[in-house]
Image (cartoon, rainbow, N blue to C red; front, top):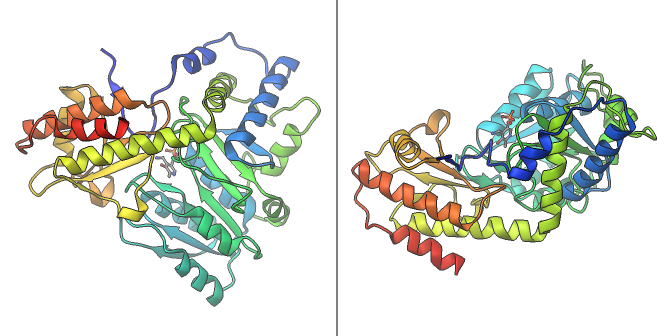
Length: 378
Ligand code: PMP
């Protein structure tokens, strides 16, 4: 039997999305392709909640992060890289690799950035940009982008948000909150196969792109925008045609369900998962105000190895979850509930968690977690 993929990406893909990717190949310099690309661009704007162009590149999300660094900044530019975990760290590493003058703002794992600290930092120094992770996949905490947007909106500074694991699962009002660049990828809440990254760019962002002197060729957003805005939309280089078709189908499904309904579904999935975890006597890893609706991270009790629980859930009970990364290896278990996930998937996951905990020698009362989750779905 097919295993249940409850990881924070790649996530499960609806059959209609997989089938869309299996259609016969078309050439990319044809009206048929332009029509597909036109539709995709329109649907992306809806999901990104923006009127600005959203660019598509064949790449992992990390490629999108690199595109943000090289297109909107130049070597020597002072930027504030906030980090609440592995992915915040990664952005800072990329920015350093391209010669930006990086100041890092790090918080204890499991917590979010306090927007007031960003406000203070901006008073002390002139920065060209602030990088913020929306959902920190490595800890299960998320940042308050609306509050941070209020601080940066009317200033001469770019707010760049890594929404790789959140867009399509957590609300992100790109234009209304004043986010200049939003980066995401196809394989998480967008419930499509991995392989595409997307970036929305505000007017402030386009101005910055004109002034950027960082080396770039493939990642040039100005070139991509020009091709995209031709009467028959195009890409500078061969696009990932099949993936575009899949993502377009996935976006149609999200729009059909309704963005607000999709966010509500994620919030219910998260509530049920958290309730189950706490009913089992386990502790949630993320700080109470920072707990994300797309992923739940669970602290493993003393003496229980998260890697063993993960392995047992996968091999014996057919539910794939993720362990902790880097310093958190073995210490936490992460359940992804983003994208194509529904109530039954959570119940199955909690059942597997309960059984695996018993197997590894952590006594719990059976079905207590399931009951708590069912109460939420009531
Ligand atoms: N940022 C965040 C928040 C992520 O969760 C991930 C993937 N886990 C990435 C960036 C990197 O994406 P990719 O693995 O597609 O390069």
